[in-house]
Structures are given as C-alpha cells and as structure tokens.
Image (cartoon, rainbow, N blue to C red; front, side, top):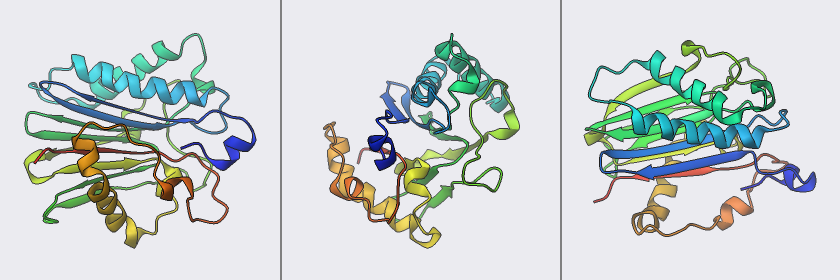
Length: 227
C-alpha cells in the first residue's frame, strides 16, 4: 500500500513482496526500499527476487552457512540492480523459507516477523529494531556485505502454522503489547483467502490506517500452513 507522502509526491511504492511455493517448500520475502534513495523501489524488488533466486538453488540438506547464504543474496542483489549503484537502491530484507521441517527466518534492517500457531502454544517475534537509534537509519542491502548485520534463525516448522511479516510502515505504529493480537488477527481474517489462492485487495483498515500523521508505505505478507 503506497503511503500518503509518496502519493502526494508522485513517488512509486518502495515496498515489495514476493511469495513462491515449490514441491520442496515455500519462500516469502518482504523488502522496504530506503526512502532517501532515488531507486529504492528497484532495490526492494531486487531484494525479494534475489532471496527467491538463491533459495531455489540452495542445498538445504547440508549444514546451513548463514554467511554464505546472505552473501549470495547480496551478490545477486548487486547483479540485479546493475548498472545502478548500491547507494542508490538500499533496501531492507525480511524472509521466511519453509523446507524439510525447518523454517528459516532472516532479517536485515527494520520491519517485523511473527511466527505462530493456531493453538497459540507457540509464538515468537523477530521485531523491528532501529539499527542506529534514529528513525531514518537502518541496516540494509548496500555496497558491502556484513554477515553480522543479518539476523537469521532456524525453527522447527512442525510447531508453527503461520508466518506474518510487515514493513516498518506497519510495525512502527504497533505498540509492543498489541503485536501478537494484531498478527494473529490478520492471519485469522485472511487464512481462507490465502489457502484458496485468491488475490487479496488492500483491506479497508490498511487503506484508512488509523494512526494520525502516518506517511510511509505499508506492506504485510503471510505464509500459512494448510490444515
């Protein structure tokens, strides 16, 4: 959902998301192009496509090497944004990869990932985190790769039924104590539509976001295990 500021200034939506389902598993990616960058929309699209590309080629049967995996994402991202410079296209990156009974969660920069179950017996958050303590600075895909900038965790997918992720246009407006209820509520409302493979229009609550003075693009994405 394009934010009010970008609509007024005729700037394209700088968020992007991509989801793919395969015989071996599923991939879901969300990216937020940094608003100060002239080609942020190019960067966020390339980030999502890069994660999908590397996940398709990755051998998840072997011991998972986070540094190598995120380095490959970074290299593919640089290739896709070329001939533009990385400094013009910086973007955050959130991903979930479901494969062989495991769920790989990755996060570079701000935004939010929630992993939960229908029974409410299992729930965790990889929360938005302002990297430098200022609202306009966050970790992102850039000219150089630093594995330490990425937060990657591996979870037993049998314990969880859904992944909810969103960019900071939503995450930054959610009080910490309301995040779980918000994420679970979105999943409950959209589970049947996602399972049916229906295209989802932007919901009314997202179009008319109730936070006064909000301006940022807003994107959420779901990965839901079939019953």
